[in-house]
Image (cartoon, rainbow, N blue to C red):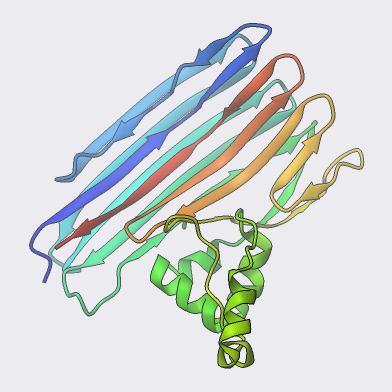
Length: 272
């Protein structure tokens, strides 16, 4: 039984840095960090505008962590909602939500769950045209912790390996080929470990981007817009104790140059 649980939750509404034609940090909006003991906190910002480069109407953040007697579990939510987001009038959205929710039962026989369920885009537009995204929220709600993801990948449960290989942000190494060379049984079973770096599993939640304008092409979760920059969507990182989602990041390759994005939510915890 877990006797002491340490919560983790954080939020960022919007952040970034412009490097040209001036060097200036975009002030972090609605930053929150939940105490390890849990609790509740909110933050809000209205009518933010950074030099006409990044703006939004509202940003609302919430972090909450507590023990539920009903569920006999430690529960946590980390949510950021941005409305009226605008980056140089090329990337706009009516609403972008980043959300991480977790539940850790006190019974060690029951596995913890951390999911991005509730993260979404509403009327995301690139260069003035609405784009449609197919997000893998259902996949990572079902395989809802690092241990389940590793097992599902190794055994290719419900085609998880095939799906994940299209979403991973980490390049495949020769680990799998070396395993198959020296352990033929693994090769015959088709089992191989999920790609990770120092215990971190990194992927995107974007299965597909549709309806891009002007012949623009997507490579996975990336969209390159000439004379603007590179747009990265729904990047998801997973460790044994916490998950994080960054819904939008823009690397500006024009003038102004630099980076800007958000919202970001992270959450999880550990106990013993």
